[in-house]
Length: 130
Image (cartoon, rainbow, N blue to C red; front, side, top):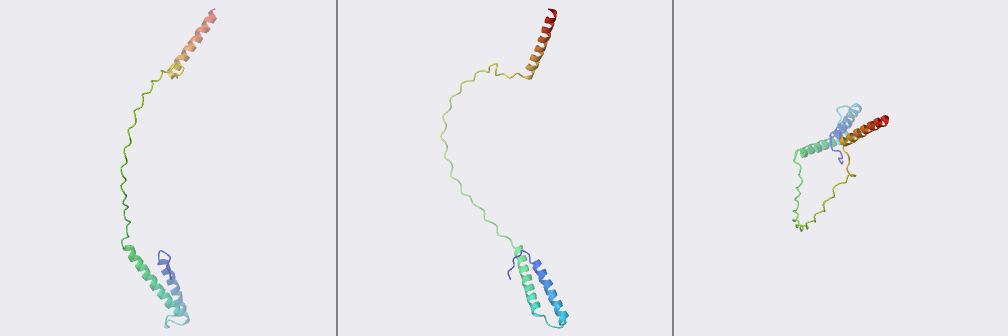
């Protein structure tokens, strides 16, 4: 019988249940003083084999596991140094920013707004006088 499960506990339990049923059926039909039937003998032998297999597995579990060998990496050959680059020519200096490119700051915007309001007031007063 091939054993496919990782644990034999369940198989031993099932075997014990079948063995118990076989023993009870023999006792009820033939009596307790009769020898074990062929089915009982087979189940007892299977139970013994399962218990032996369980014991060997438990003994193997206590043994140290083989460890993987460390990978030894080969050293790479050193790279050849690159030839030095020729120096670059200096760039021409940039021209100063023109007035059009200038973005006014917040303070400049507020000052310009105040000037325009004042100019509007003066213009309104002049037109009222004349």
